[in-house]
Image (cartoon, rainbow over all chains, first blue to last red; front, side):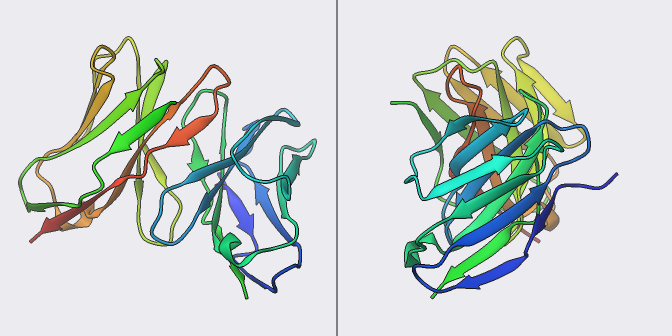
Amino acid sequence: EAGVTQSPTHLIKTRGQQATLRCSPISGHTSVYWYQQALGLGLQFLLWYDEGEERNRGNFPPRFSGRQFPNYSSELNVNALELEDSALYLCASSLVRRAAFFGQGTRLTVV
Amino acid sequence: SQKIEQNSEALNIQEGKTATLTCNYTNYSPAYLQWYRQDPGRGPVFLLLIRENEKEKRKERLKVTFDTTLKQSLFHITASQPADSATYLCALEMDSSYKLIFGSGTRLLVRP
């Protein structure tokens, strides 16, 4: 069974540009979580989608947004990129209130 | 405010010993708590989930306890091996919205 897949693996953007990150959950999982992990730091909760709806978001500005598609895959968009947005972005899928399974992450570098 | 606290200092132990990591939380009573392992540059890997009505859970060399009175979970690795060296994260839902929040993790280093 395929795990959670994220694309791209690496992404280099210029300050002010937009980045789009993608996540395909494990088949049958309806929830997708997004986390930001800056170098050497912990996982910061970004967004949670379940059954196509945004259920919760963390303390991030509105330029961080996303959506979940009918097939439960998800997209994270970051607008007006800033240098401090450079981080590993992790996606996880789960059934609600069950173990979360993570992808390998997208390393976003803003220059 | 709600908090998850894990010891930020690395735990350095000798191979073969038992490693014990602590997760404390405040201001909420989660229905369950999870433990994950994370290696550098990789996504966390799920290890164990324990529910509020379970005092203890085991999986091979791993053991987790959950004390809802103390608001604390302990994570034990018995007969530790150098391959167990990693950062260990606890995670729980921090409010009734079910969003999953992670502690900052404790780095474990097992010396041969």
